[in-house]
Length: 134
Image (cartoon, rainbow, N blue to C red; front, side, top):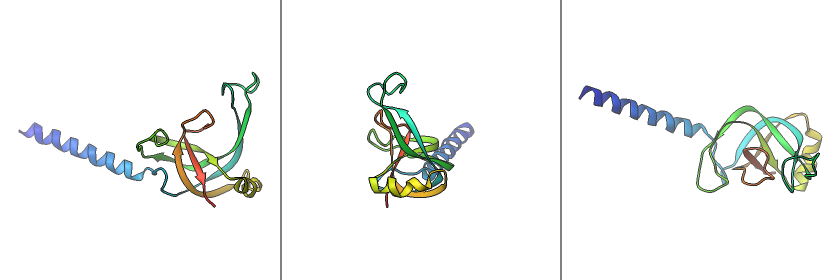
């Protein structure tokens, strides 16, 4: 009987730990989150093979945020809602106006608000992306 109490206690404690850990992770859209970090540009290989610009793939240049503090995301239903741990960089999804307003801030620390989703195409170059809101 005593062993069952220990086993149940350990099981309950692990559930509490997992629940608390999940509560700290950020949720995907429609939730709006604020992320802070270093804004920078990066170029990755795109179509057709997403492997090598030198071998003929189109360059895909975008804006990225290297986070001050790593984040985690809660898994949810759908291909764009995978759970991720220790995310240190996010790709930014921006309108033309937002590209224009953020361009002078490249190389600076910024805080951006928006909605998160996880990568699901070859055009997504980080595990988690932020659809930036104005």
